[in-house]
Image 1 (cartoon, one colour):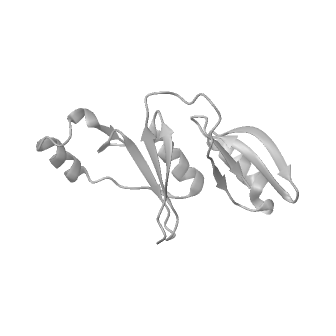
Image 2 (cartoon, helix red, strand yellow):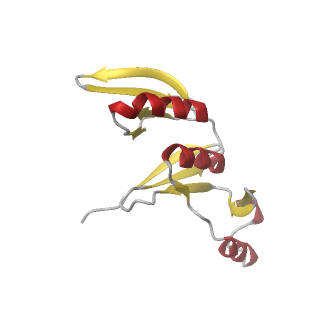
Length: 141
């Protein structure tokens, strides 16, 4: 039986990082149901401290997710963690744009706040490794 997957990225500021990645990928930040959140706090299933306000909306403090308008793409969840990133990622995203668009896309992402780390090649494959605003590595291929 096949399974669905969700990609989870640890973050010290999940809502801001989700906004950045939404802009980077052209995806949308998944809406959170304010009425549901309020109801959970009212009945004691969650504490007020489990919530925060982001862009004028009540949201769960622990995370924000991205979704693509195209079906079949994995959901990407940015999850609040207390520690800052300290070492290289063991898993990363590859943003596949094609050789003809790679340089323009790298320039656009750097303009948005990414940092270029290095360039790599193996056989016919080439890529540029960048870091998002929290230092998470990803490649543009």
